[in-house]
Image (cartoon, rainbow, N blue to C red; front, side, top):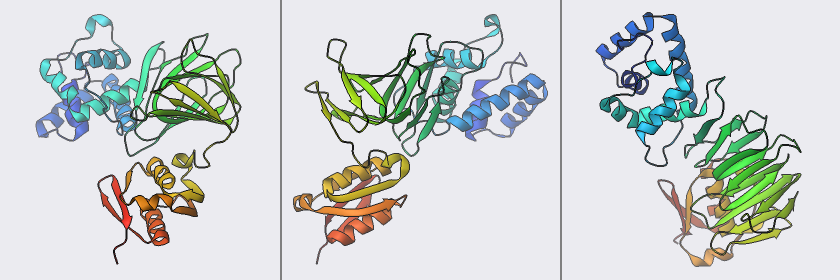
Length: 332
């Protein structure tokens, strides 16, 4: 594939993984595989990272030069003197959709023995992702969320960032605080379970504690609030106001469990829950519907089933266009 049998040709690799390779490409690839055991082992590692990262979604334009350096740093075991940058044509392939998916997958699955590498994971709009950190903490991300941190953690603290929604189960260690930066606030814990909702397009960041307690602050200068089990913090990004309420949304984890419970719940609130669970946008065109209230239970039902129940209950009709659902009064 290259002059050096142990250097993978990333342009050809991208075509192979994306299914765009022709017969000549496949012949060159097979020749490279047969050139040595190291090549076959390297390819297995690349395929595994591709498979684990195939649902990744590019949220912004990637600097391919910088991205290449990160990929090479994580995946190439040869001495620095043997490493080389890709040609402009290879960088073009790296910026193609298939190559970018590979790129993101490789960025997350760090090669053992490398210390203090920046790790990032971008979750596709149609999936959830569970991450197990090196300290044993587990984070489950909702669709459309981005999570990043350094692995392994520093000795004095564990710092992570999230844009979107995630359920945190933090490994307890009172001497090793776990710090989350999310939507304008800082969350400090030593071991607990909580849900963070901090999508960039929302004006309010929410933190709901399911077990234990956390410390929440809006800035380094603001007072720290203690949030205990059963409490929720709401941070208004515009006013910078932090409000604590002694209750949690009964459907706070519905996006994770698929279970929803509504007791005389206003229809707009029902719609918000469905948006979080199914990743859709629900538009209620008739303002008279805002006063309707739903009492129902759902357990891992499809969106079509839930919408059918809602429509039958309130004599509505629904129309779906892509990821947007329109609800309106049924015509006679």
